[in-house]
Length: 235
Image (cartoon, rainbow, N blue to C red; front, side, top):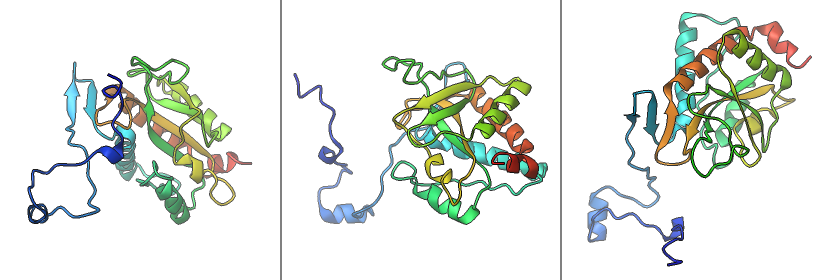
């Protein structure tokens, strides 16, 4: 009936490790305050172009960071490039604040697992990005509007490289850009994403071609960010 249709609240859940006493729990090494994660394996789906795994928001961003760093390790960049795998975005963009305090960035590109709307129950006006349609450029979210010159640089670069680009906007969501773009006197910031179904679940799904295109776009944009270009974002 009505109770069956309710979502179980987190405070009503518990984890059963199969123990029958406190001593058995301690023998297993389980302690109060230990973190837990869902058991969810990475898998390749369908024709091999889509992947399913937990935490693509934002493990996909970390993957883009790593691949970009590998590229520029072989192809030096005229500016100093920092890659930051920030933590605790979902509970207050905490890692973004501390990272910005260390780096003092002149410009920032936030990498996200963006919301894909090509699933039942999501209206196009809520999330229009689709798997296989290319990376996304976030035009606004609840706490940030991107630097317009940096936004236009991303759009222009995607057009030059013939990379399909989708646009997203989220009135109820935010990213690490919320605090980074407000650091010190302000930091030109944009958000580039890889469309991901079922974000914040144990089974997010993304498309490999979207990832590869996002990587190509990211590298191409960073290659353009020499000192005069970065200075021109705020002049």
